[in-house]
Image (cartoon, rainbow, N blue to C red; front, side, top):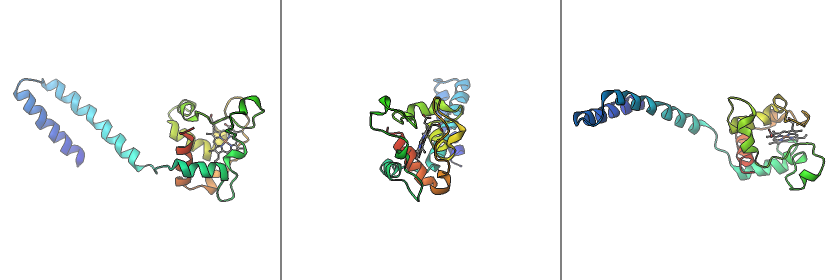
Length: 152
Ligand code: HEC
C-alpha cells in the first residue's frame, strides 16, 4: 500500500516536472526503481531486536543462566598481546566481523559466532569456544551482547 502510494506520488511529481519540460520520461523510470530497495531495507532493520550494550557487557563479564562468562576466555585487559591467548582479543571485532563470512554483515556474523562458534574458527586458534550458548541465551540476550561487541 505504502509503496504504491509512493509510486503514485512519484509519478505525479514527475508528471509535473515533465509538464515544465525539466525531466525526460526515461529519467522517471530510473528514479522510481531506486526508491524501492530503500523501503525494503528500512522494514528489515526495524524488525531486529534492539541491543542494549550495557546489559551485553554484564552478560559478557558475569555470564547468564549458568553459561560461562565470555570473559573467562576473552581477556580485554590490553595485556593480551604479550600473553598466551586461549581466545582472540575482541577489540575492534566489529570491523573484522563484516569480512569473516561472505554474505554476513557484522551483526549477523557476531550473532552466528555466539550460537555456532565452531563454524568459523579464527586463524591461529582452536575451536574451543563454549558451544551451548544458544540453549541459554534468548534473541534479546544475544542482541545485547552483539551491541556490546560492536562498541569494543
Ligand atoms: C571457553 C572459552 C571461550 C568462551 C567462554 C567464549 N569464547 Fe569466544 N572464542 C573462543 C575461542 C577459542 C575463539 C577462537 C576460535 C573460534 O573462532 O571459534 C573464540 C572466538 C570468538 C569470536 C570470533 C572473533 C573473530 O575475530 O572472528 C567472537 C565474536 C566471540 N568468540 C565472542 C564470544 C562471546 C560474546 C562469548 C560469550 C557469550 C564468548 N566468545 C565466550 C573462546 C571462548
